[in-house]
Length: 445
Image 1 (cartoon, one colour):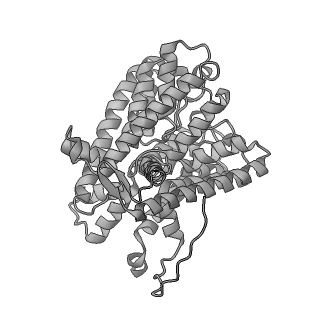
Image 2 (tube, rainbow, N blue to C red):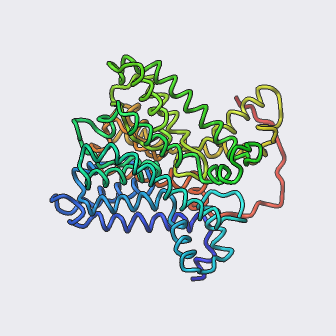
Image 3 (cartoon, helix red, strand yellow):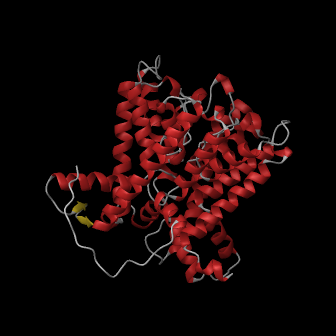
């Protein structure tokens, strides 16, 4: 096991994700996992396993119509493991069994939980588990009040639990099928209890475990929050407000045509929540206006907070880029936020993350567009949804060929473990040369 001890922490985390995906793929390939359709095609089982473990929500087969209860439970377990992390679950069992957690395990947990310090990481894991159970439990109870009258006790409770877990983990899977002739949550678009409960679960899972830790420790004393929490909360609030205003202004004659103002406001707010990065749809995205689609893709690309169940480049990365651009425009050499200076290394890292995501997304979108004969807009929407682990679709995913499915599979995996982590997994670290090369000016911009 010496090879394991020499392995970097990002590689260990990536391997655990791959192990969960492979196990899920094998289980979904069993005939018992489908509703009388025989064994699922390996590529469809793999795609579904990756989508569930990477908490994306893109599907090639309808979850309620194609997969049996066994298959749905396998998907739900992968969503839960992918949402809070396999290392978190392993640590929970270690704590329960009173097993000592060494320094190396704490380092891995620090990476997996998105923590910025090793001290107190086990305590943070305990809070993650406790908070997850509480949030998903409250969400399930609220959703059951609407699902039980519609589906009956057993199916209603099962649907409520499934939706609650999937929402908190920002997965976007549902077991509603085509209930009342609509896909995803469109049948409940006028029900504020369902829409707001799921929105609250998505936001709770997407703001990050570090933010929740600060909320528990410091309450209303915002000054004591970490800079990550402050920037993440502020950026989240701005994006939610901006998205709601844009959708309210652009979708009245498009995807929300015929709705009263109150219903439009409710669905505009939800449309600004779900791209970050849950994937539930209360409206038909194929009917969305061009500005609405553009705003949705921007929100999907940004995603949620660091150290959360959400994907995307993360709100802090986006905020650092905007603040750095503003500082340079004002002739300032340093980036500051909340009376703190952001290091130059972090600014470079933010630019690197965005570059990785942009190059990966655009390359994949061109390939999918060429393979499927689809418009670049449709292919780009699906690819951003995949790499942002969102799950929204313009109904293109179920019709994709094998090659395009594998492309989206790679995007979902890369988006879940993160752009920089993926580079660290694939690249070998080399020592920097002692010799410093001479500098020379280069025209940019």
